[in-house]
Length: 132
Image (cartoon, rainbow, N blue to C red; front, side, top):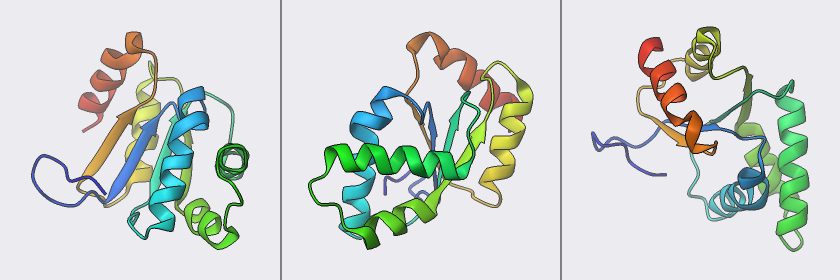
């Protein structure tokens, strides 16, 4: 997994926009490949506005992987799916970032991936900054 700027290994990957097209077309396939190679070793917290739960996120991941990976290995998918956690919320709502913080728990070296429209970047960065 990528190392944050302080050099520590990431202990959680947080993906804003996990329900979108970029995640469906590229991110889940990449995460699956990392899992298959034994290089993924942290939880993944997905954040989006869709009214989903962990199970719906895992279903979305399954659909994305089934459509982009030839003959996916069930054990690899199961290991990846166990890492996936979902936080529902509006990026303009401070409560969303409180829920993200709760989902991150004791993690100290998070990596944030913004798979959202560039017009939302400032909103998410501001929300993260105010929640920390």
